[in-house]
Length: 539
Image (cartoon, rainbow, N blue to C red; front, side, top):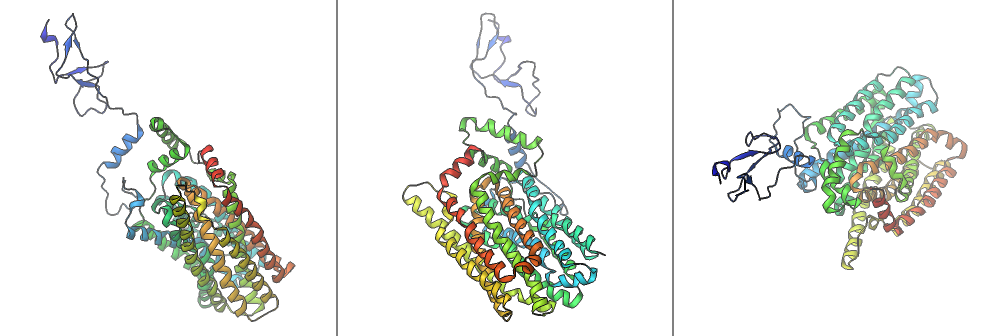
């Protein structure tokens, strides 16, 4: 036996034509021969030890290596987000509060912008010598765009992250709002109202996704109570601000205020909002929901991520969630609640100006009870939502039963709220119809706003719980329904009041809320059915 033909214990040999260039090779093709080696009859070395080779085909190994690599940026490179392995759910309480504050503040942008010049509607009509329906169109277009565009923002954010889309969208809304402020006719105002709504609408769906990134189910209700204050408080706060601005500086000041507010939110996001989206964790959540077996999970996840890289996001893809009856019933109910609320708020401006003969500043103050009612109702709703959910989860755990998102829904509570809304909406409509002192409809608006917040918080949180890995997309369906109904309510408010009178109109709205609340009972009763549908459709 010729021993010189046998490589030494630590000598590298070439395998299948691969080069053995040393430890820095990106794709190493060399092996280290172990000390224990034997020879064949012709003296050729035979390796009997199985040696593991690094497999560089796994995208996630590459991603992990990149994530752990050193990251540096200049102080002015705000748009660069530091990659992190930290689960956003483990963020400190202070950091979560900061993110919640930014998202809740950003969430008020669209509602405030859509209603800030309610007290100035008559002024805009006179300035452009147009009809009240045309002026209402400038409000309703903003609302319709706010309904549709979150579908686009949500489909992108559930694939590529939140922060950069926030920055882009708020840049759009600031520019659009400035152009509204310098409009020279009603057509120009309507067009740029639509453009500003494109940007302002992003938070209406992405905000829910951001909060689902950082809050677990047991604490999500309270967080969402603050987040959904925007859609409820905005229509109440906007007119208060707009009334005084219009009285002091004219109707254009309302848009300069909105532009400044949007710029402030943009700077908050730029300096203080981290990226909360974690692609790898999201894909793993999808895989778990689809029931991918552990031994095949690596292959499945790799293939899914490759598809994410090469496919463009379909802006209408969130609409597939409407195929789930629990989602469609929930968003339909939330839509009618929101539509009635916008109908009431729009009627406020015309009724208090034309019927009660109040000026713009006082009309703004008249929205204050609704704002306070929304704040109180949201706080109570968030606490009740978490209490009901945690209590039901505890009972299920004690009885060794499985938990489900439907445990957040309390049918007795939602039923009582629906009947109460019927009463206070009827009271609001008939006090206006009978020309009772305006303190009466103001008081009823307090109870309407607070009551709407209770089911709003509960069902919005439920939608996120039921589709945890697609929170922004599920919420965008909710947003679509809410703002479509709100747009219809805003556009038709004047005509409906003239045709039906406020008494019959708002009594009918209350009856509709009670009737459309019945399907929510079906949602509560079929948790296993919804779970099976999610698993079957991979959502």
